[in-house]
Image: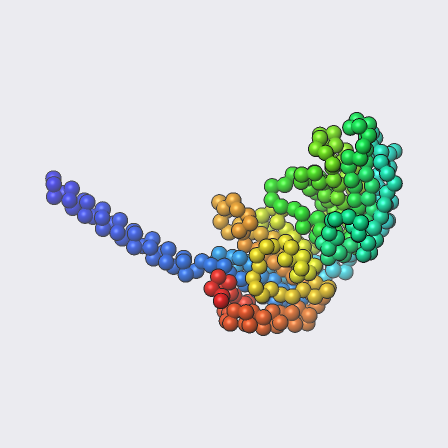
Length: 348
């Protein structure tokens, strides 16, 4: 009996050692694969890829998925490019400001004012740089009050003409993040702190409450619904969003960026070398969960797509990017179908 116990213990130890070695090899293999991977490719008028992927395999798979989406959607995107900037509502922002007749219980506490061109926020501390980057053209604003809360200014309504639906959608999405509260107004009205924001057509609407109260919040929502009804454009999203992978995309992380400066405002950490956007380019990005059980969306990989005016412009931008990568990292790999593949963590 004693010998049997010893033999069983011996076998158990051998099995445990074997499993230890087996899993050790797996961990060593994974450690060689894991890192901070960038993959970038160019196809027709697009440069697209991945930033901050944990493995080269996942980075390459995302690139392949976007490439297939571009191939399948080329005809639809051409049609969208021809009609995407057509808007149905073209009135000035001040003509969309609700009056006392439309808004029961609330009245304008002062006459509306406007900003146009390079005059935005010239008399206040707020920076207009983000609005200019997204194509700002004209703004109208007014404050509202109600006897229910002491007849003092409590709501500031701002309506921005951003020139195109893509610009309006872009500055709206600049403010979104996962697990936000929404109202179904426009492209969905975002509720965050003292603000309600949404876009529809070429307009971006920002409503600020000076105090937090249920009645004031209800007034903001009512204002938003009246404005949205006055804008006859559909609340559809830009067609370029269809090129992003749909699987594991984190809600609230889609971003549109018209310049490298805006891109740097969206993400605090980016690779040293990134493609340079031209004046007519438009970029889109979103974060994707690599581990479905991960809760930290800030660490999730980023899939991006940049649309240039034509194929030759995209090819030139891609050549400049390859040269920049070679200068900054010294070397890079050619991944699936010729994409640039870099482990940013190993770059000097």
